[in-house]
Figure (cartoon, rainbow, N blue to C red):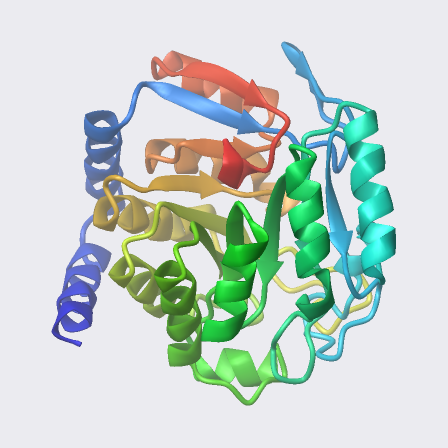
Length: 326
């Protein structure tokens, strides 16, 4: 608890620093700990074609173990994100999908699904299938909900390469947006359970999750930093059409940059990524700020972003894997 208190004080101090000074500090930390390179992540979930690179659709896919079903119907998604995923509502179907990916030269999948009323994604029936797909040489990463100790150990035994999970740092956001009777500390407990099981974790922070307001993000960052993560992924609220958040204004790029920069400073040796979700209207500004804030990887960046990165002396590397695996 004393460590958390110290992190909280440091975050409060950094929040008072002028943004330009904060970005300079984050850039300095990044250069000290990593090569001058920017990784581009463009998994084959969608077509990505820029001047120097074009990806192959289907090489790395998102799969939902619940199809399009989710018990929570969160205000920003309402289960619509699941409709863009490949459905595998039985272990047998998942095995067929995995074999097909392998036969076509694919590299792996992100296994996810809708949550139940407790905030948990039901993977119980899939552990043996995950092991079989791992034996084929596929990368298997899981985007989970809340995870208890037994599930963490089962995921480890199945051979999962990595676990992604959204960390929510505000009680009201959990209640109003996710419709869950849970507390922020339970997300911290999930990370601890996964780390103790020996799994690599890639915690995500959804910036602006509380109807476009930055509310629990710094508390989420504090909890994440306390477990010494290998990777931190920042994504920006991008409400789906026909949800309770349709038309919600997302945080300003400067606010997003401040959060990412503080994340970089607090976690000098962790890989810090800007993930797939970001609003189209501010995309380039957000990506350019993220580079200055010291990110290692950006998913589906624009050509203008890559030009800016090269001007800063960064070599561009391209990958068709999920950003957490780059």
